[in-house]
Length: 188
Image (cartoon, rainbow, N blue to C red; front, side, top):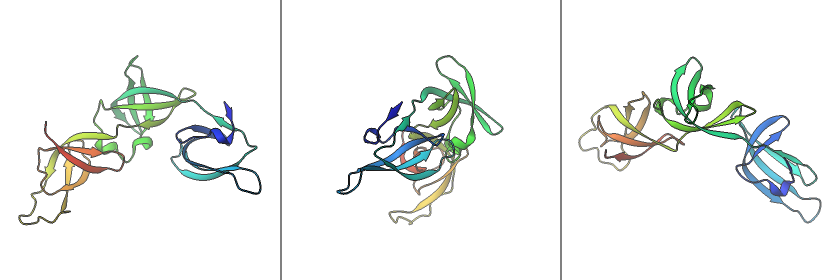
């Protein structure tokens, strides 16, 4: 679908020079002299890189609709993660590169949204938070009560994260998957 520059909004998916980009930021500029334009920051959905691009008022942009499906992780196989559609149980391989940073914090059967374009998976939106059990934690030093004392722990999925020193082995913790930080201890 073609649209003018005034219709571009954050979160839209655009096809620019044959590649798919998500609009991260857009700013409409109407100078006193000259024609209006829009400054955008775009994230490539396939390569996961960002670019800044300016579009003139006369340009038409192509908006793309993605198919989004709720899926769960079944298992890992080589360079792919096998996802299962929760509606029809179809299994689809998705490249691990979409989840590279947070992979050590995902359990099998974790639910997430997979985006498809022309039948091919092009992106994965994981949940914002994960609750995981600490499987290894060194004891905190007695008397080390400064406000920001942290230690490294290992969680049940094998990932390692910095947490406050009061966290012990066996505790459940909430992790923010957007920036891989400790949020809080969770009582189960």
